[in-house]
Image (cartoon, rainbow, N blue to C red; front, side, top):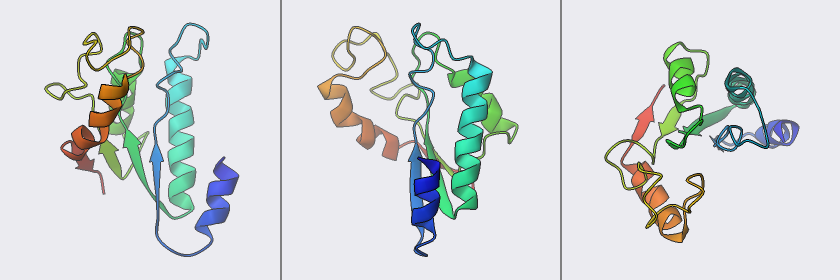
Length: 131
């Protein structure tokens, strides 16, 4: 999808790309190592920025095995450099607890309908501009 995004960026107007990646990489059937996920996100983010996009990265949920800590570390070290981060899963926000079945499916990986309805409202309160 990156070549298509790069082609769109040649159109000239300012573009925003929202990246939400790695979330399912940790699932048992995928077996994608965390360091590979971080490298992939860094490549995606870097190429989108080079193409002229402002890049917003949605943080990982606090699901068991999710690469949340590794992604935070990569951002802190500058390995992963989104312009904006959105964290609808931050402590204290309605989607922080993946065991809350009023907002999460029993798989603790996917928000249910109620969770989806609040996810973007929650994100707006936790935007961090990295530029």
